[in-house]
Image 1 (spheres, rainbow over the protein chains, first blue to last red):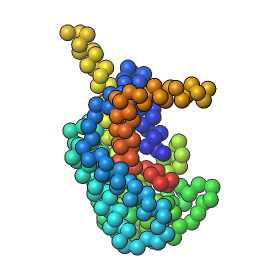
Image 2: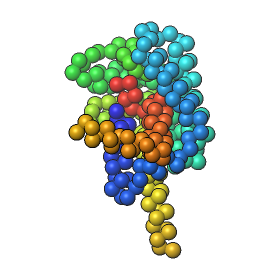
Image 3: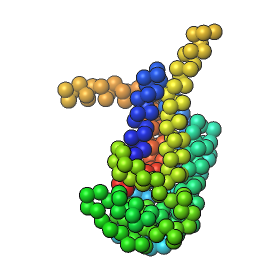
Image 4: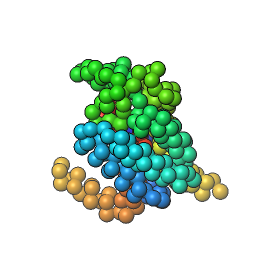
Length: 189
Length: 43
């Protein structure tokens, strides 16, 4: 949902500046169906699997690699290089920690909300890609879910998440405003 | 009100450019969620 909290204001700003939502229809995302497939596999894996077998981590990493490939393949689109960089950082830290995104017990406790669940190291918070690991046991700790956001809701994100969200927001802003720039050019020349 | 919403939806989706725009938006958001963007699955 944090992604939507960023994208909705971005779209509103673009529209207020004269952007056009229909401009998105001119964008050709090559291999976009692969991203949809990767998401479907991830969702099924994370929501429906009750255990966390090692092969699931391999599948999770493969789906991430697929999405990285889609973003790199479409790198000519605005913001997609930044998004691809963010994705690569996420894949890097996940690969270094057994295929799951590490989160400290304290951070997991902070985002668990009212239930204030205590997670032990090695546990997987339900319905997430995370694994709870102490800071000293986390490889590439600075790339893991360490950035705490208290607004609009409590969550922790990674540096890769920030780059990814920023890249998508930039893509949306530039794409929606593109036709406005065109109108400006055609009316001033 | 319900009928007006329905008519508005039909107007939007009867234009193929708008349909393409919605599809592109969905693909981008889903790709970002699959890539590990915050809160993909409720965290």
